[in-house]
Length: 395
Ligand code: C5P
Image (cartoon, rainbow, N blue to C red; front, side, top):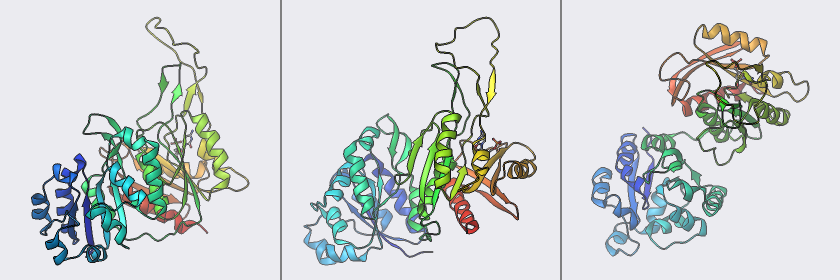
């Protein structure tokens, strides 16, 4: 059990309703939680609820003589090991970036030397606004940890990036041990997601890859201190803010980008589900329905990872993935050898609840001289273990 002192700063967004659950789970893990609410947060969850779950008086005013007598705001700021602002609205993010201190929470944030983390939660359009992007970049530069946002359906009905991370994801982040910067000074290039092979201007061949594993690897590599290039096929995920994103569609585009970045990289990870074939010809106009059958001629795509592994100069440590439905170990070891990889991460995609599109995965890592099985777990945790394992293999 870790005994972390957490100030949970709640600002006024609908995701505030999840803060009761967040507080309970943090306490279960041994954290002491004191809650500070902005005035607008109280419209979304009551101080009484937060008092009941935290077991402490909730603070909401800078000018409350009683609260100040119990614990002055500077003392409060010093008490914390971590101030977590969750949900963090665009408004509080902007205030933090500008250094405004016009209520208790924003004042604590300036008065503390504790670790500060925020869990942004807002409409996807507001998240995409350049003002928000600039403010988040400013905070990140100052060392504020930016946890999330996640993507998906929003309370307002929109779909996109801007959801607060789920309480359990935040609990994991609060409780994680500080990572050793074992990849500091290293550049890691990762391919992720599916590719789309156009048939005509409106149709394509693709697959079910969600990109979750590749994006989790990017986050893990960043957490271990690496510089990260993320070459991504079309996915609905938000790239980690500190990664350099290279969006691509087809295997050929992914190949071109990979070959440009691989020689400048220490590690190359092929996590993308690259289409093996593409249409021999892409129709210029939308294909018309004709007859009962359609024959497509497909030609082979370049094998990106094999080409990276075949580099004669500046070859990075090259890691592949093998998604198999049978004889996983045999096929994976075959690919390790045939593609001349340094490591291959094999998973059995025939098992429900792991691999494609799922949040969890189990992997076995094969290299020439080792075999390591990593049991079914959250893709983020798994990604960290994989990246740490890769770090041990770098000279
Ligand atoms: O041959 P297979 O597709 O099963 O191999 C999987 C590994 O090869 C993955 O690391 C994948 O990203 C990579 N790959 C690639 N280019 C291709 C096909 C697969 O980089 N055209």
